Each structure stands twice: as structure tokens, then as C-alpha cells.
Image 1 (cartoon, rainbow, N blue to C red):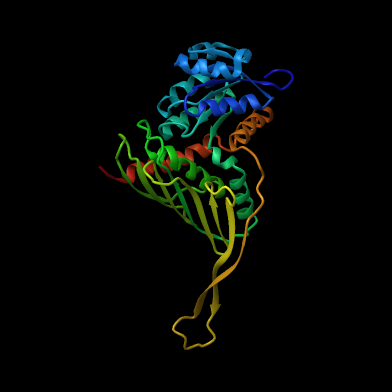
Image 2 (cartoon, rainbow, N blue to C red):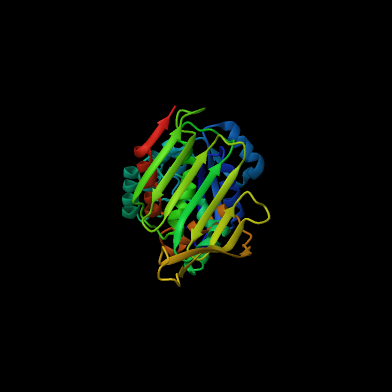
Length: 337
């Protein structure tokens, strides 16, 4: 890191998501985007059309790693390559930003966490949704006790979208919702997991369902690339209030409902039940949300962690908890073909 606090960064991978990371690194003036690296020259040529001579362009990962002036390496590549390249980044003493999911399995993640601690570098896994203003607001609402005790969370992440072969829809999409659940519940460990998936249009399940027991609440998580509509929705039911976060809704992304049940002690001792449960329906409130880019927030949080020498909110520990659920879901999954 330079004396003025400027962090020199290198981006590895300029495919689907890489341009978004590059844009936000370039936008944050505390980062100096020094390298864009990709194996395909046409992608580098496209990047050069945007950033001209402000950035070095290379097809060599080794060239980037060998540069002692690089503080941060951002890996925006297929999941199967995360472990091997991340290990080289950490061994070179550089801080690591890596796309979700962190690695292919928990053991790899644990090894990288241990290595990072030995080398004194920070790992930041881009669980981007926990840096979204709406999710941050939901966290505030839960922590304030407005929802009461959480009963369940229902997550849907579906689209007629890009079908992948290196990961399942669950590892590609449900990882977002699992990271949200982990964040909102302060890292509550899952107790049991059941899952089902269908292999179609891909070598791995394109349609997946997870039901997870977190002890004090349960979660239902749906993900697929085979949907006629785009849906990014989170429903949380509490004992006091409930809320719906709909990322697709442009106007009302987050609504808090004063709905639930009131348990009233029966007045008649001969009543069949000692308690009467009655529904309650009050006002719906639309909280004001900060206008901010989740990816920019994620990269800025990472930068602050480097400056403060502190662990990332979406560091190895959070990533490992998410990976444990994904691994268990894989083990328990009933696969239909």
C-alpha cells in the first residue's frame, strides 16, 4: 500500500462479472486498478477501449503475482480455479478478493484461511448481497427486535438465465441467500439440511430446493435457471412483524408488514383449548433505503479492512459456514434426471 493510502489492485478475469468489478475499482479513487488479466485477448482489447493507458493488460497471471507493487488481487473466474489461484495470491503475500462461492469445498476454504493467517493477508469473499442497502436495513430491523423471534425465511432466486456447467444452480445462486441468512442470523450454524434438484440443460442441477433447520428458525431456498420470470425475493416471518424484500420491484423493494398472530388466553375454562390464536393485520411500512451500489460497498468494505487490518464481514469464517450448508445439501440431495 502506498504512503497516501492508495491500494494497488489487479483484476484476474474480465468475462461475465469482471467488467463490473473493474468499473467499481476504477470508480473508487482509493484503489489504483493497475492490471486487468484475462486469457482472451479480445476481452483485454475491449477493456482497453474503456481504460486506455490507465491500466496494464496481460494474459499472464504469473506476471501479476510477481509484481511486488500489487497489494490486492481480485479473482473473478470460474469457481473450479479459485483454490489454486487463491493459494498463489496468498503465498505471494497479497490480499485476496474472490467471487462467490469461495472454493469448491470446505477443506480447501479451511486451508486458505489458515494460510492467510500465516501470511498476514485478508481474504474477502464477495457475498455481495450482505452489502446491499436493503439487506443492511433488514439487519437493522431484526436487530432492533421489530420482527420479534424469526419463525422462517423463504428465499427465491430464479431466472431464465445463464446456465453453467462448473457449478449447480444451488452453488451459483443459493449461495447468495445462504450468505444473507448467515449475515441476518449472526452466523447461526445450520442443524439439518434436506435438498432436491433436477439436472436439465446442464451437467449439474439447474433446478434446486433446500430446506434447512437453523434451530430457532427454518429456511426454504429455491434456485434455478429455468424460470419464465426473474425472481429475487426474500420473505421473513417473525412473531411480531413480517417483511418482504423483492429485488425485482423497482419502486417498493422492501415492505414491513404489521401482520401476525396474537395469542389470547381463553376466558372460558371449559374451552377446548387454553389459548385462542387470532390473526392480526396492521399497517404496511416501506422503509427508506440508502441509494448505493452493493458491489461498490463490498469493495470499499474490503479496502477498509486492509487499512484497519481487520477481518472482513464476508471473510473465510462466513464463507466456510455457507460452504458447509452447500456441501451438506449436495450430500443429502435427491437428484432427478
